[in-house]
Image (cartoon, rainbow, N blue to C red; front, side, top):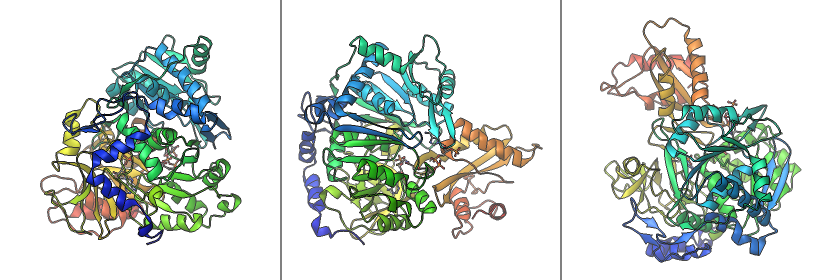
Length: 639
Ligand code: COA
Ligand code: AMP
């Protein structure tokens, strides 16, 4: 264990206070928010699928993120944009950002967007992406941000499900060594989708000029200039606390992503509480979350959390390495005086690989830096130890999911750091009654592996349901362990109440902190005319944690070279899902190992590929197949 003594932390007292009276706890936390109609009911257990927070209250998230701060901190930077891709930096004060967002909201209203309408945002990490989210919030419209690394087909699936009135995009994103033209992907997605938006607003970046479709597409800057000239600025629209702020699609077990719904009131309350108690942030301080606005982490801690808390947020366009070197993160912290960095372990592994002795760190003054937070995948002890050693600040692993919107477990810096145990994201946050259970839903003893569940109701900020899919929500999360939300993560709690998250119980894998469905990849592989059947598993990777690996059996009579087909399969996943899937490994095998009842033995294949000890499952149909697979993997240097 390392870190401060637990006696110095207020965590246990605060958690106990929540447990004793959850309504009083969240009612008190709600005072951090400006309401139009303050909440009278903190939790209505009868409303919604499992209860709703702050039913009856009205509010506006953009008001809380921007407008209310203009009075008290109007000239303080709200956002610093730092692009390691272009070398550009720019700062917006709270006042400037409010004005920018009010103009964009005016443009959206001119395009017919009203409260409750959906707006898809498909943008790179540029300030306009943040303005877009806040402008939707200002109008009470529901944004759905789609990560730029997804292909047209994935975007189309999300457009069909969200049915947006408008889509906001940019001419391009910038990846090391290439300009990713977004507009052709957007055009293709709209073509593929049955639902068509009324209008698109396109931000033209200097690196690429997008062709606009007449009658549908509008030039972003031109529209903003006109709105300003004509005084078409939009005010904040009061909405119900229980109204949706956004829908964020995340990988499910099939190719059809789940539309995670986030409400307005509960989300703000949870974020405000977490900024202070978990991250230890005070208004006016600089907070940096090096994720992407396309992911939940970006929604909560690039955009809404820091702004609601009156902090300065950093929007970083770049990578941890190669833009231009492994000192990039230290440069940003030092240049903008960030107190806190939140990133994925994979980013640190990338830095460690290129600069193991942290030579680049010596070039920067990190006097402002207080804590490093990690999430998105398991923080492996070796990486945490390395980071502690070079940074000399607490390195805090915390565990959460797109569904929860904020940490389920963590080590609350604002309440006094608890001793750190490497490999554990520490303890449950108030609001989360976390249990480890066996298949029958019974609590297991300490240090025993089981399924991790959260006793209902989920706390403020967590998803109330899936977009227009209450039944799918119930089936996916609530039915396996009645009375509980099933996290689909497995792990254990130790004798001190520390949680250890060891992996998913479904077919979701985590590639460089990005959540991907192996089921979705299997659907793509199966669509290839030469493929008879397939299985995709996640195999261990030193940098990305896991990478997908597809095993395919070709149809009888296919005479083409398997190598050629494997290349086509790699290209097909990139085309259909996107480069973010990092699918680079397709392996042709004679047969797939199955149980006698026909279930593919993915778990055993994974063990072989990871080089872990494995034994022949008793239920296997034909033991020879696994040996064949082991031989093929070893021939390719895997396992
Ligand atoms: N638009 C278009 N393409 C994108 C993209 C975007 N927004 N984001 C990533 N891609 C592409 C990359 O260019 C890469 O393409 P390639 O196969 O042609 O090289 C592919 O998707 C995989 O990207 P990435 O996962 O970023 O891997 P990488 O090899 O480029 O970089 C790391 C490795 C570790 C540096 C990088 O994964 C990283 O910084 N991870 C941090 C993850 C993170 O913040 N996760 C958020 C959860 S907290
Ligand atoms: P996402 O919805 O993309 O945030 O992915 C959520 C999943 O990532 C979780 O269900 C976990 O499997 C994994 N995950 C996130 N954070 C952690 C962590 N700190 N430790 C272990 N696994 C994590």
